[in-house]
Image 1 (cartoon, rainbow, N blue to C red):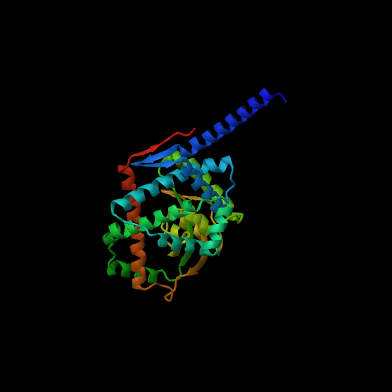
Image 2: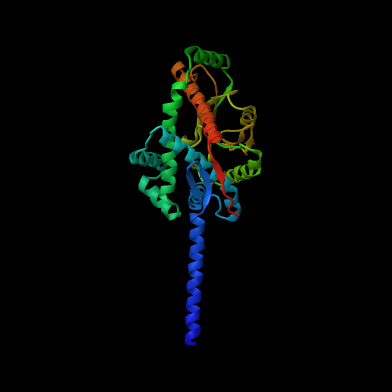
Length: 318
């Protein structure tokens, strides 16, 4: 080969490699969204999508990624707002708290913490991605306890009224339910969220990923941090659309996505039983459950208020 031609070829290859590397860096360094003073980078979105894909068993292809992207960005925006509020209230999260929560998630996947870390690395997941998500969840729970918990008031009379009602409903069903809840906050998101709900259901039916792992990663319900567990729910306590579907399900059944006023629900009926005097909870248990439900409503409203007053800008990456 002519020496000049060889030199020209080498220069061309170097330029091509440099251009590709520069383009990849530009994509990772570019901004997907801005939340007040914080920026969510494309690399943040890519890392979280990778975690979501591995957690759910979704195929890592263009179709799945296009469905996931809006949900991932929305989740990262929520987490940014939560961390900003925690900082404002001078709330901190220790590394040991993150590690303990990480170990709990590993246990839910029947793994030791070190085994879980190795499995994530082998799947191409950056550990800091999950650790950041855990840190946000812990920080937000501390915000809730500090700012909202004092507002929760459940009287003994309210609890007793529910207990009396349960006694009147002896013989009716109660359900041990787990849930994945995907809220629809505006009509533009409807199609993407429905498609994602369908895809998650398909993966769960095929056994590609365990329900608790998918719920922890995707669900926006109060039980998300517990793998979607809602505990025992008496008949008549859930939205009518969910009640109607539960009445038709057998133990172990997984529902197709159910549309309610607020979004899509995927429910897993773990057990079903008839209410009897022995299974009716104590007054303390009822007060605790009612308090948790009230706290969940307060924290949802609180996050919506933070969103309404925040500067949020989406950057077009098309």
